[in-house]
Length: 593
Image (cartoon, rainbow, N blue to C red; front, side):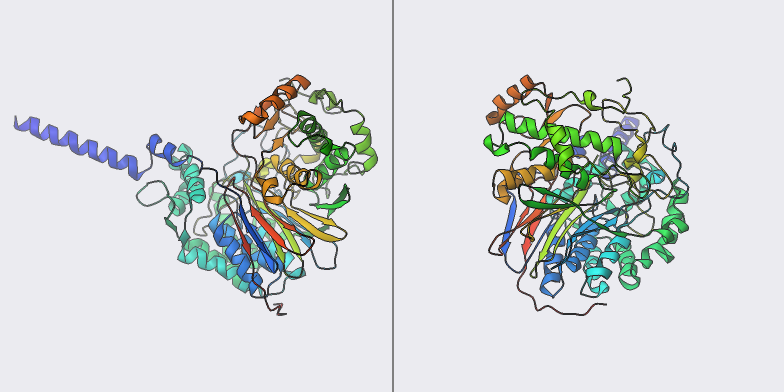
């Protein structure tokens, strides 16, 4: 009897320890499943003002940007501060270990693109990923460009001292900030993955982002990142050299050696951001300025808009089958040319005709108004084989009219999921944006064309599409979005809504979006399950489109419109959360560091 009692208590204790371990190590699938339910849809967030506007994915970064404007900083100053703040408050995409594109419209000057895309390390080879599908390790990391790019923009256009722009992010990381439901969802989503919870390569991510008791994050928790605060302090005090040389460079290269990566000290030292001319086009009397290659966004957007300009879209209602069909066809042709021709223009020759009106007119003449083109019919010269995407965008306009449209990324949500040990920042997995299987292109969306194959120090192709739109030489719209290959089409949806259909910006961002990327030959529609679009879908299928619902919301556009009277309207998308902040009037200073 005595032994039975001992056994009984032993079983009870083991059971309690098991339950505790389920909570401590986050191994309960039910717990994590409940914690990774996407936050409920809310209205878009709207702000109005006349003295500056900031729109980004987190309330903290938008506040930081607004405060910089109110101190007398210009739109570039605010953008630098926002970008560093997002590295703290939106770790799935905000970063210092990634790269991106910043479009700048200076007052009285030409729109330019500060290109700070990552590049392949010098040890990279064309076939290095031919036999792997793993994109979440050190080998997938491209040489980061963010810090050098932000410095390049600041040196060319900034007003306030560099340190003053980085320190708000240092404070956020050191003191911590309150997690909202969108960030809780984001952190829980990465921590819920079995590989992240168990593999040694992600131990530093767990140390930084997992709660001590192993429970999921909830809105109201506080996130503190002491290692990241120290790293940002080094950058604040030493500029970009504080990242590409010295202690942080040593830690990054050491992380590469631990995790099978190939980035060297020389790769970091050689990295340079570039100021490139914007890709430009016109659409129904508006001037559209998009990012330069290696972003495909500017080229594909201009080509698709040129095609659509040959049709009177507004003759049909916005979600009529006629309108959606034409937009999908323009997307199809644009993405086909993306696959055939586009890559890093420093390494490949890009056909000059892609953004011309005559080329678009020829394509438009081939579009059947009641029949979808089959994607494989426009594949030539590509031979078809037998049969992730988290970025963040922010927009800024200052009281003098300078505008910035910035998109940057770690590539996948949470990038490589590798955190540099002792430095607190995530590394990208941008090598995944190269064509991993040379000369192999299939109908499921895998592209193997030569223009975007791996070459040492080459920049990988991007879909980031930060844009600035002008009319009569005045900025009227600043727009962009995350979302992988959907980015270009998200921006196109917003431009069509505002230009063709004269829809106010809040509704233009709120409405459902469509996406077609050539292959797979599927038309995705956010409104698929909404009853008011049922007849449209039936008609589109009769045209020959394979219409499907999106598994997750398309993009997260944070945009600003400038009204004729100078009023600024900032709108933050509902899809991933966000905040629009209007600035109070500032006394403009001149204290360039």
